[in-house]
Image (cartoon, rainbow over all chains, first blue to last red; front, side, top):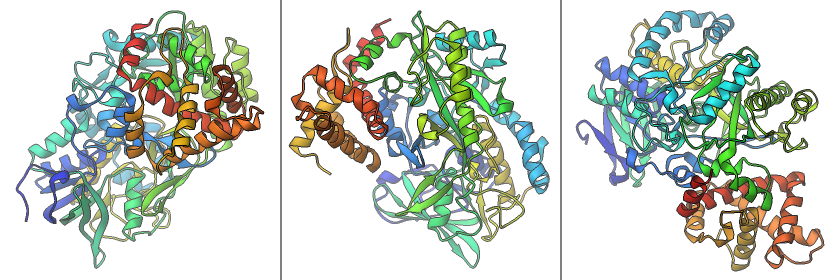
Length: 504
Length: 123
């Protein structure tokens, strides 16, 4: 009934399969890998169930289209419903988003943590700051987090430093979880050299070394409950067989802020605000043309950030796209676009991630998640402010012109006055901006009030015993920075709680 | 949702109009795209496939008539096609469709290894 140890590939599971473990973890991304590692190291038997499959570095393709079809859910064209509809990215592979993100690492910001505790003092005991710090230290060490080396930064990242310096904005090289990066600029398609220390090759490997099994290419369709307790999960393998994993001690959901609430709803567990309180970091970007070749596709994918306006909810990053995505962000269509593509070596695109106040929700439609989300007027004001600063930085760094990409506004400009006007008198409607969503939170919020939260401060579901949520859906709010390390730290605490341990 | 032969002609003309030949790079219309479209139909989510189809009918067939050309996009010369797609970019709803088409066109264009190599060689 239960193959012993190691990996099970759902593409080859053609007959019904039953497994047993102390802890079942749904999802193998930063949250799932961290939770599995902690539980396995504590001596629990662990099965991790992941919808996607394993990939080796040599399988990571260079063309964006190949990467999108192979590694991302919905060909990376998932959209939130709102005005305008906005795309968001979700990975579908072992390791979740970790193998295909920009490798950007931030610690949990203390100011955000203090906000959470001020809103719900019970979180102070559940998430002890010092425990989070200690876990983060250990995670950063394991993941080799360090600032991007100058040798691999590339022109696009150095230009951002030059622009920020000219404007007197605090900036720094991005701290990333890589080792021996060669600056190939292919983080978002997966590093073909295997230089990213993503969770599939670190935390999940640690979990496997401690005895955890990984069941890949199996979609979990339901959390099973009996007399108010979670007893396991059921799902279906890629080959079409029914899969059941029994959990003796805990079911830990770590499938993302979109998939975890959808799974709860699909399982009939609709208590509390499950799926509501969706928050994220919508981002807008600015293209600019420099006289010297930038070759945006070269150098560390994302190697520099401007953090001087984080208190306003704005964080700026150099972006690194493949050719197809860069081309789609250039001005115009037809002959105008062909000319821009021909000049692509001189083009650069930088983005601003906004700590937005808007709240949306995740609902079920035909069994799958649908995200409803609409930026507020204050969020749109941050889009305008962010674009102004991006444009000013580009011009200060020597750009010939910049292209804000805002409907109803000049397609390109070389004048700071125009950028000031964009901020002060630019469009108020979200539909004028080409925004994309990143970093999603809050849909199974943790808290002490069961009417306003889905899980308790100890990560346990308010109603169902032995059911825990460990991913960013438990975060009470968005955090304004790249969340992979805070997610891993919180998930580590969740696993400790699930096994009845003390967070410290 | 299989494409009919007529729809394919509209679609191919539309995609080709998004990226005509540049000063030193080939036109998208000169690139073999049958494998791309097969994979697109197999893997793209339904809203993207639907968006591409609506774009094809709206910009590839209807808009040229509305602009007074009295032909669909395949019947227009390069300059007229450019005019149609530029005008679409200035119409609020059509602009959204152009964005979808532009994204798909760029994916198709740079899925071709020779285009990738040529673009990378340029400085």
